[in-house]
Image (cartoon, rainbow, N blue to C red; front, top):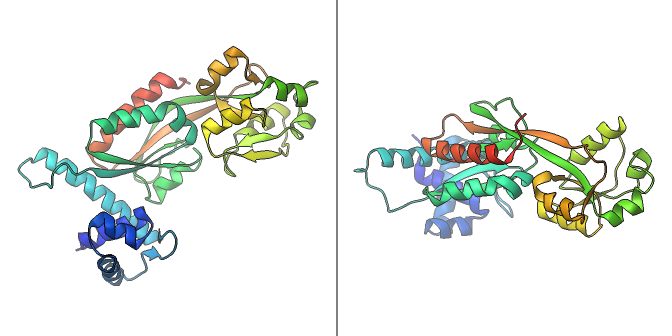
Length: 298
């Protein structure tokens, strides 16, 4: 039988990133946190935390943290069904999820906010590329994710959300400077593009479809959907933007499409752990409703 005080200490260290901050969150001393984790590591028979700045969970540690998250959700659900069980006030349970930045910047945040306003949860949102958020599920770091992968991760359900439409756009001055003659492989190889991070392949996918071959693109890295728009407006580069995020800029002419009527459509899916509690079902309803109102249907 696992010691849940020790599991809580492990989860706090991983979440807070240090033994000192975990101790403050748990209202105990750092030495108490260290002792609990040491006893748990002896019980499990392997290291659970990589000490550093910040402290990180090992693979086994991540699985135990996932177990803690699920137990907290199930306990929350049980208290709702059996009100006579003692509960320490209105305790909010962490709800770890992963989502791509463009969804978070457009339709997802209002759905999460509506859910969190009416549920005793603390949303713990991780941001990653939609082609990589499923890995967060597989590793046990989150209980649900917006992903570009239809095939469900092990132990998860997958539901289609709709399609996010992206448009390649830049400022009129940028287009005049780099694409006055045409938008092709040679001009794209010279024009600075905007990418979210090293995982962001949207611009390359759009160019490959347009030019029917790979083109090596010069890149500015900006890890923010809003910064993408601001940089494009300032003439820093061109990028693939969610249509809903730049619609008014296209309308007033402050941004223009590089190639009209050449969108890139990215299907999105909602995956959630089957073993999670009914509390997660409430978030799922909000997510599906928001996606249905904002994303395109295929």
